[in-house]
Length: 65
Image 1 (tube, rainbow, N blue to C red):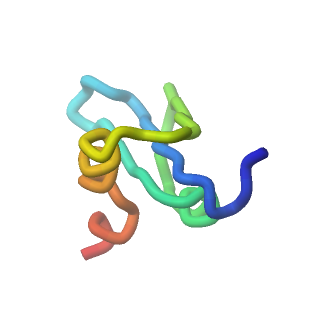
Image 2: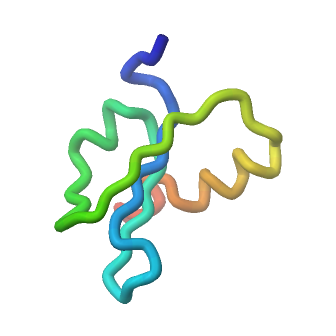
Image 3: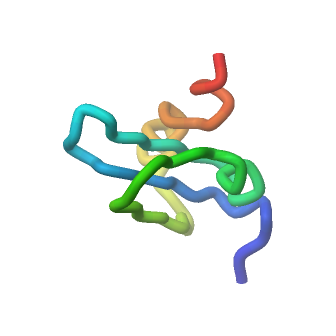
């Protein structure tokens, strides 16, 4: 059902000073260092355009700039 192109959101230590939130295709998230636990991975489905815009704020590529 899911492919390397499936959009996902990875989260680590949400709410702490060192939280990490990154979105992108699963193939790109494989290379993200999320650091120590706790981790969550969200596999997206069909999203409303506003949801998609918000997820894009955390895109892997935007965090590499």
